[in-house]
Structure formats: structure tokens, C-alpha cells
Length: 216
Ligand SMILES: *Cc1c(COP(=O)(O)O)cnc(C)c1O
Image 1: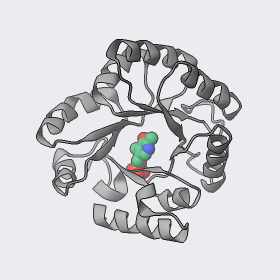
Image 2: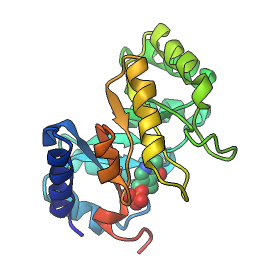
Image 3: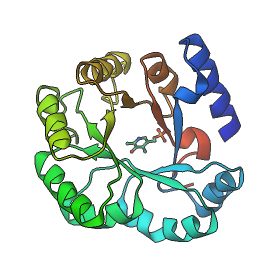
């Protein structure tokens, strides 16, 4: 599939949901993709990309950022505290804020830098033990912690359990966001971004449907 096809599908999903197409930001997830595929998407003019790992992103994006002005980079994967400084320097948004200690570290870095990437609190909507994200019951407290630290909170993010209908998870995230006065909803991937848009997604994270299977 191509980026244009995904854009068309996003626009159609928006129309069905009675939403303007500009209400959804498409994050092209370039993790583990061969460089020529990413360069091809950059050449079409797309500038919003997502990566899972700080180290992998550090290896390729400084160069691309220099060559393609206006790149906006989103960190989607778990962030270790000791990588927070590096993430701060490279990313425009962090979708994986999931614990108080990370908020404390980000607040200190924001203080030093005088700026901070846009933050999303990641919620483990399926309460899966092995998965990143704050448990739904603890999400409001973490949202409050981000706010009281004075950090820019854009919204909430989730990755539904692999083997379940994602819609109830998307709806849970949307409810949590509404209850907390948050407008940003980072949800929906290659297999379910249209469902996510129907549930209110503002940021969809699409990788393989744009670039093809990873590592190819
Ligand atoms: C890899 C990844 C994506 C993209 O997944 P696809 O199924 O390839 O679209 C989206 N979000 C996160 C958090 C990811 O790790």
C-alpha cells in the first residue's frame, strides 16, 4: 500500500465519523524499515514519523532531519529514564509516559532545556502484566502529575491487546481522556486505524501498511 492510499482511507473513515480529515494526524512508523523506503516517503513530502527506540532513531534521524526540513518525530516505544535526555533532544512528542519517575525526570530536563516534547500518557487498557503503560485505575493520578509538573500534556495513548477487539479499548481511552479534559488520542495502527478514528483517534500510528513488512 502507499501513503496516498492510507490518506484516502483516513479521509473516508473521518467522513463516516462526521469528522474533518485534518482532525487526524498520520504518524508514519518507520521503525526497522529499510532506509530507501523511508526516504521514498520523505520524498513525497510527508514529515511526521514515529520510532519505537531512542537508539535506533538516533542512528538515522539526525541525518534525515538535516536533509528534509520540517520533520516531526514521535517516540512510540517505552522510554527508560537513562535515555530520556537523548529522547528530549531528538523527539517532538513522546507517547509513552507511563510512570511517575519518568515524569520527574522529564520535568527536570524541561527545566534545563526551556522546552519539552508534547507528551501522551500511555494507558495499559487491557491491564496486561507484560505491557508498558499505566494501569487504567492509576491513569488519572499520572495525568495530574504531568499537569502539576507544568509539562505539555497532549493526550492519552494505548496499544490494545493483540488478540482482542480493539474498539472497547479505544472507547475506554476516549472516555478517560474526556473525563480528564484531554483532546489528544493516540490510537490505531495498520490493522485498526479506521476503528480508532471511529472512536475518536486524533493520532494514528501506521507502519507496515505504509512501508510494508518490517525488516524486509
Ligand atoms: C510498531 C508500532 C506501530 C505501527 O505498527 P503497524 O502495525 O506496523 O502499523 C504503532 N504503534 C506502536 C507503539 C508501535 O510500536
